[in-house]
Image (cartoon, rainbow, N blue to C red; front, side):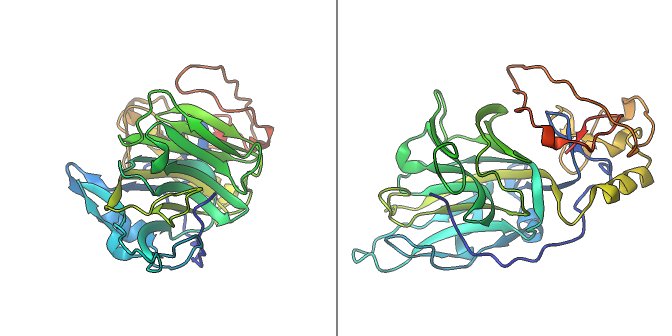
Length: 337
């Protein structure tokens, strides 16, 4: 079951990129993404409100179905323990007619098409809510990472909506404590979605994978459904989000426009224009600190290609083979996603 909503958001045509990364964001599988949204909600030990205000829309809609109605409130998106708190309020109405107060944020953009989406967060140790991190276009074009706190700390759900055999998986992961902070990650390419925890792949789904522009959301909610969220909770339940980092392509920024931007910045041979986001020296918003020592290479062109050969390693695992990632490859580095 998904965490659904109705959105009417403006698709922004301005590419999101830092001045140091004009030639792309290279992930652990050597895929180059054109744009980024990096939301660091924790600044040292204090809550950083700036990315919430500039990059996300705090949702305030009501409904969603289920035994008990729910209402998304801005008050339930708040600073919490030096990070972003996403709260489901304690519920005490014996008639179960009053709405449950829940929380949700969504990117302003709804043109995101393929990418690598990561968030470091912890679910609350309170049964009866769903914590969701997901892409969304419609009920039949949605990729979900969901924690049902009633399931216990070792269980997580991965789904490509609508749920069916081969598109929805309940995973019990040995040693996982989802009440602690972990990086949850969705890699979405044409025909394939892969799901990771702390860089280790947990699930691959090739059924019902969307191929249309989407919004990315994070929410915490309950509707009292005993078959899904459970609850509602009788005490406040707050998911804690340290960051959300996304590297992606969009329907608003073409491959040709990307190549032109890269070449105008000096090409991929200029070390500062290429950002390797899974390298140890990568700093969100700034790039790689070792970029100055990178060997210079010629500018990006669209006329040369290179076949990328991968080998399996334990951490991180290599992606499922996906021929549809071509034909946009660059001879200098990476496979253009």
